[in-house]
Amino acid sequence: MGRMTETEFREYSLSGNLYGLIIQVGTPLAVFALFNCLFSILDTMMASHLGTIDVSAVAYLNQLRMILNAIGSGLITGSMILINRAYGAGDNGKVSILMNTLIRLLMALSVLFILMIPFVPDILRAISTPEEFIKEGALYFRILLIASALNFINLVYINIEKTRGRTGVIMVINIASMIVKLGLSAFFIYALDKGITFIALATLITYALFAAYSLTHIFDRSSIFYVNPRLIFKGKKEYTKSLIGISYPVAIEDSTFSLGKVVVSSLAASYGAEMIGALGISNNMCGIASNFENGFSDASSAIVSQNYGAKKYDRAIKAYVANIVITFTVSLIALAFLFMLDEPLIRLFSTSRSGLDASFHDTISRIFLFDAFSCLGIALNGAGMDFLLGLGRTKITLVLNFVKIFVLRIPVLFILQRFISDGATALGIMMLISNVGVSIPTTIICACVSAKLLRKKD
Image (tube, rainbow, N blue to C red; front, side, top):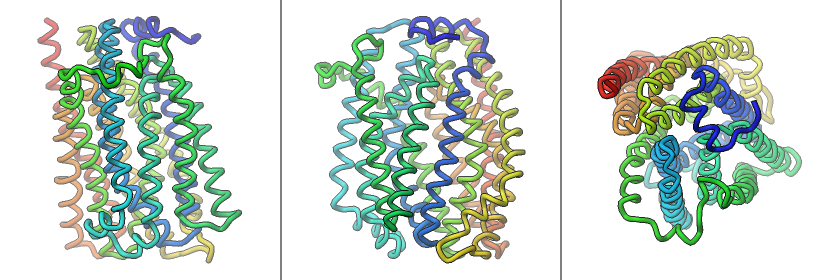
């Protein structure tokens, strides 16, 4: 199928075959997610090359960055729910107003990030960051704050392309960006023998190049999603309140998820600082399967939102069912490949300048044994969460994520620590319980919401 115009894709989204639609839109996102995980693994391997403390510091500080990033990404995700609704309903004027309002809010958030830079060491100490991580990572974190502000531009552009079904463009541009980033990181670490600060610098350079490309499309006058510089600061108050109102649960949800990971890392550190790195590596490996399946799930969210905006409620529900079938099937296939490749991947991660660390290798293996099977729960839960997001039920997704982190993850690990002396086994079981356990209430809630939508349709 050739490239469709924005109007043509809207009609396809509202009337085309749902399985074909999700596969068409989701495949490039899934391939991108797969490459993203592979590149993330390579990036972690480069940090591992520097040493155990370095890779653990990178894993820890990246979780802190994700807490801050979640504010912007949550704002974008929530805003795109309303933008997708207006797009599905054919209200192009409202799409334009919402887009300009979103850009204004992101600009204010970016300024806040920049103002935090001088206070990074104090912020890290205030949250009880290990002193060795502050010594290695303060400058690393400062650079990432600037990179995060730039990346908001890229996230807006990516979501615009996803809304109009041009996910192939997203895949190509993101993979190209990752190649540039990894090339720079490899040059800094292996050729120049630099530390983790230069990994952050490679990220900043890559995001800056991507942002330069994104801006040319965001300001494209021929697009329904055109951002008009003259209108950015002239948005109506009610639209600002609407975007913040639907977005803040998503932002809190994403921040809470990242905060939960930081708390888990702190608990894991009681077994030794290297346990943080081992858990992060296991999560990255499992991310090969879970992020690949989430590519299809992510595509369905926009489709659900567009059909909901067009009042095609039964079709929105059918998109959710199709999403479950596709993501669960993909999850099983990805999991099979993951178990075929686990040993060489773990060996690569546990090898540094001084050679293979057998103890670190064994620790990663024991976490991964349980962590991998949680991908099946992630598939079922992800389909439900994207269905609820597409409908704008952001407060429900916030509660479900809270349950996942503060009921099924942190307390469970705290209890397991009292009965299991092996930290790797405890961490692996915790991941399995939280990821599979949360899929049960998510699916039940989605069934109830679907029944309510059908009654509304009737």
